[in-house]
Image (cartoon, rainbow, N blue to C red; front, side):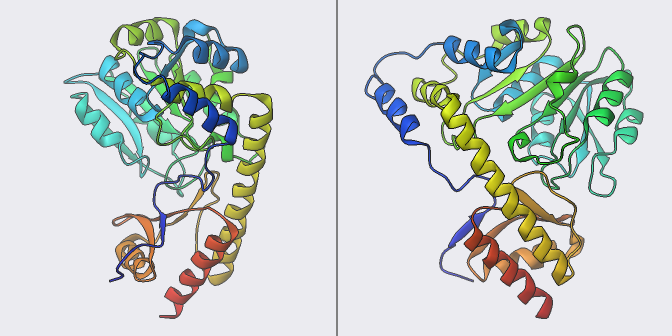
Length: 334
């Protein structure tokens, strides 16, 4: 085994540090760390609502999309309730459901994508929520707008559909559609987004959700006060300037291009993998997952292993992409 890991490709973090403007904004707030932050992230919430074109009372800022998802599930479900989710998907969904005291109903993917027909069939009178990670983590597959809209129309009124769009910024498929553009004012749809990925703020924990007014009002009463610190709020506001938004679009496009280049090289070697719309690729090697991950680790590269399912590899820059391709080729020849 190696003495150290040279490249950690497990977290889907981007390889770029915060911009100089974001660092200045954070530093200014750190200098006032003796003062309390805005408890409700009012300025950030208003800025996000205006940018997204949604009413401010339907948006809620919190400490990362994962924490907001956890709070959401604990709010809408409890013992005796069911939450339907695809599998494999975000690996913390089962734990979140367990923390809510509910029962998880895992629905297998179909050809590495979310099977909406099977998800709909799994809904019962005990179902309180359905989780959809779009694009799906770890497979990278994405649901297009028409399919998602048809699913939302078919879901019973008592079920909340939660669409986790953590990787939306890396999508290049023209058929993809932001979930909140499909929401009706009275519909049971909640969309989760994050600053952790494309905006490079994983360490500051800033995310938000858009949902029905009654739900966001209820969540506000349960949200821990001061859940997002002043540096995080300031960095997120700096990230929402037009100039930086264009920079984010550019670098997400560069990562997506490297993702597609890696996928092309892997397919040329003989690997079978789905088309990813995230900042990662998925190798569905089933019972060879741990063996493949160990092979990478012996070459000082850490990848995310889903035992019995596959291996997920974060895409960063061109040099690391080339390294991953070389190791993958060596594995096939070993």
